[in-house]
Image 1 (cartoon, rainbow, N blue to C red):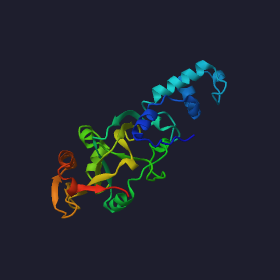
Image 2: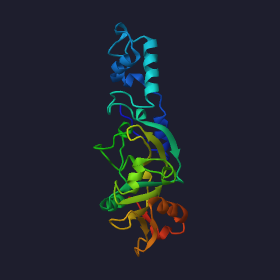
Image 3: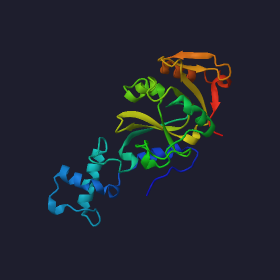
Length: 249
């Protein structure tokens, strides 16, 4: 059965608990053959299902899954619960600033309709091509943490690979290590993002980012993304009326 996040004051806690779930071997019977080969289980003991299997076989399979989940389970594809692909979950409390990168042409719809996310927890590792809505989880980075780690994805985002605009906001989130992307990423509950600061590429061909006064368009800070994000962290309260934008209706 698909897992859906519960609507409570802090859904990040639900996601954190879900990602800490102990592996259920009965959900992963499609990996039995890989286990048999890796563990050199005698053919006479192999079976297609765990139903009625000896307890020691189920335990051995569970232990193999737990050990393999820290890397890449063989031949798992996109079939399996999210906790097999998203590891080392850490709660990111609401005081931290997160960055969601996008393209400038998407900003107006996000500000009007809210940030879109993936609702089904099991779909979180594979957001490409999945159904997105306002009631779900969106990916983001935590600049004050990611700037100190060798993250190719964050470096690409800073360089504009994921778009020429970003929204900086505060919201509860869960930071995870993504198996396939091999880097830390944060999952934020999209409906919790109610206000944000718009950060844009300073010029089309520039590597600089900038925050502008939302009324006069005067540049308030300019530089690499980490510098701009640090300025927002330090000055958001004093410049709230000039830089903060409402997200969603």
